[in-house]
Image 1: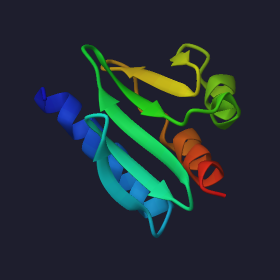
Image 2: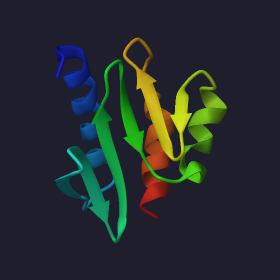
Image 3: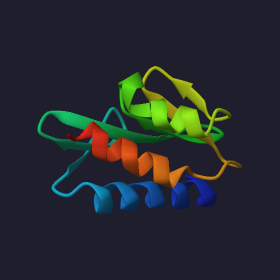
Image 4: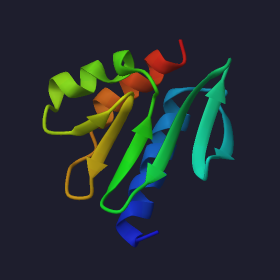
Length: 99
């Protein structure tokens, strides 16, 4: 991975693991994949951004509300390399994803 993107993914990983205790970390679909009690979050590196997959639009509503300029898909957030990571909102979504 490009150096900057690798650092972003590592930061997301650290925040996720610090926010939600007891996650099982795996590699699925060629992505870091975090599971607990049948629920999951996955991270990915794309050409010009990192993605966080929640697979539920409900889990990213708070991120969209605070950061309308962030690109999203069905249950995923795409954070461009030049955008700041919305860590506060991601933490809230991580917690909600594993309730």
